[in-house]
Length: 119
Length: 401
Image (cartoon, rainbow over the protein chains, first blue to last red):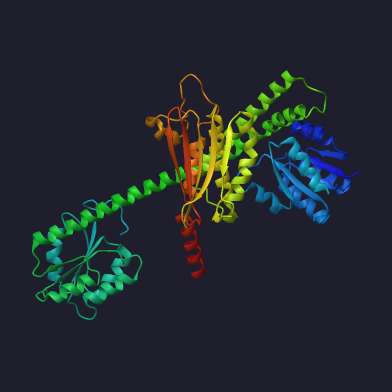
């Protein structure tokens, strides 16, 4: 079973992503801060990380950089963020994300993106 | 000129002449109104000018060793003395070429010996007025600089505010749109028709709110001059076919005829496909919104080798002639009959118009009230906006440096 790590500090949004991902056969791990995300990425070795960018301790860009350094290119990281100003998607890709999804997400589109990144 | 406001006592004049009597004479004329410094040779003039920073130098031309011309040339080499105005004084001005030589070398004015007291005073006052004007300009420049700094920080603050507003609104919208979508997917249980209708309304309004956020962000970017076209080469026919296909179901659902007339060959253009898509989509949505029966027509016409024209025509409510100008102003949605209002931010056409300029084109409208409207977007086949050229020039400059 493929493993997904969700890094999201907003409980409502985490609940939404959890509900959507329950429609698929993925094992889901969750972190609500950047540091926790890094820790779980290292111990759980997920196939895909859904990374929020604004987080309580260190932000998703920094977390992504550290995870990339620790785990290399093996893990897919998809930024899922409300940062939608010009240049924000580029910042995510520069930090090492494989893709960028803008919030608010479209539920069907979200699942399609997750499926395509985890392949 | 280093001193600020120049008043009677603060304007400092350096009088240079190898003849002590001449210096004495000039001093007598000026000492009531000005602070005076004296020097008796070119060398002494330069020394004192550097130390005292006078506002004006009255310089004798004919001096032993270093003459007036040479002295002035040396003064011009020092940063702190180069801008001090010099008035030449000499008995040899009978020859006009001497005057010309002095002025060409940078002298501010000249005086003929024997010095006429009134002319001397008048010419010094001219310099004083000039300095007062310069000091006023400097003061205004400082003020403008301060205002400019304030505006820049206000602009920065606005950008931070907009970015933060965008982020903070998107986060709850993610839950609203997401959970609504999830319920509409009927994963946690079936919903009945009434519930579906209610949820569709939540979804529609949430999406409307999202559009409003995006519109406000677009406008702030446009007005800050920060929106630049992203140029790629693409087939405009394919783009229009795509757009038409995506909106066709909605048009048909409303019982309207949808006619799309596109060339049967590819038309490659170099322009910003995302912005063209945004404009055309907006025009099509408008046509759909304001048309209750009849049809909507999309056509692409290749005008000439330079331009193409995309037009969206509808048989909707139309616009009164007097209201046509207001159409492209922000927040001016014009209600056809003043009793029924249409959904929308009132920003769409304003943004379309601005975007059309950014992509080097023009958006025009023709309309008959009660009959329908036709919007025409004229776009250059290959964009060459002034901004684009400016940017290139800038890069070239950098590479030369």
